[in-house]
Image 1: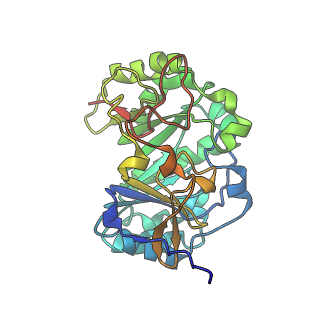
Image 2 (image 1 turned 60 degrees about the vertical axis):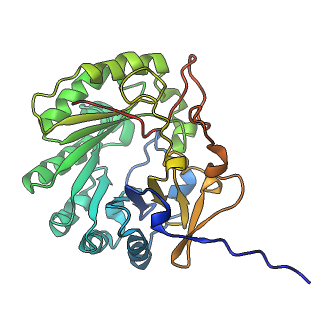
Image 3 (image 1 turned 90 degrees about the vertical axis):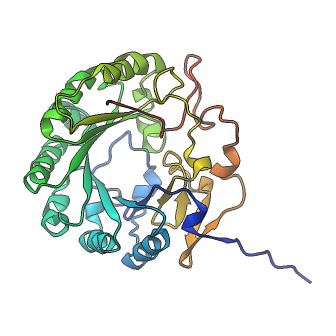
Amino acid sequence: MTRLAAPEPKLAASDFKLESIDLYITSRCNRRCSYCFLPDTYFDRIQHMTPATVAAIVGWASGAATEITVLGGEPALHPSFASIVCDTAAALLRVRTVTNGSRQFRAALPAVRHALSRVAVSLDAPSADVVDRLRGRGAFADAVATVDELRAAAVPFDLNCTVLADTVDTVPDMLAYAEASGAGRLNMHWFSPVGRGALHAADQSVPAADWRRKVLDVVAAYRPSRQSFTVDCQVAFDFPVPGADRGVCAVRDGTNLQFLPSGAVFACGMLLEDEALAAYRWQDGTLVRRAGDTELARTTSPCEGCPLRPSDGGHRPICIYNRLATV
């Protein structure tokens, strides 16, 4: 007699230490940035997370996570973007979204302005020439127009900046630009060569030594002129700076989950290029753990650095959630 495999146990949000969850509600995007951490296959198969699925995930997370981040692609390209944001906010959760500043987002802003707790606008340099070369014609103008409308609507906003080899020398200018824009935070990322970035922009990673000298040291020395502005920068490597190595690991700690339209659910946002690594799956209205060689199998204690990134000049890579912030 054939023995049926035991069903995977269903997981509750209380089984994690969730601070937030990320919902990738659509794979559509109006940009094809060469350094995106999502893969070509993600964008090639147009997928939308249904509003019913969003509501089910929000219901599952309520009482555990306090914030939902709505992402894409470009989230405003989801045909139900506005209703998803408003319905999620009605569940008494903070709703944050990340946008490249698309005209579709600006068109939706009047309908969602009161439902959004914060908006993060992706802007990687303070120059139209640089940004348009990296993201496509009109990318800088889109971002600036969106920032202007967010400021006019009194919606709190941040700027997200991925630092590349081509932009690392503009970091001081970017700090000043972000503060002058009225942003509450500049969120700076080290470019990880994953997804499209691994295929189309592998040479854009900033070496560890340059990251320390041209980014971390500059951020550590920066003193904002207004108290309402902070800089939050990925440490990236095990440098001896505040917050550099506390053994943080998004996978082991279970502080954040990333839900994709396909049903794949990750604990680490840098692994989304390979759905076979997803530790979990959302199916039939619940979360189940996947067996096999997933991200959970690759992250063991004690922490010896991120197992999915190589060392650089003897410097050990650490989790993206190790951050250096101005105070």
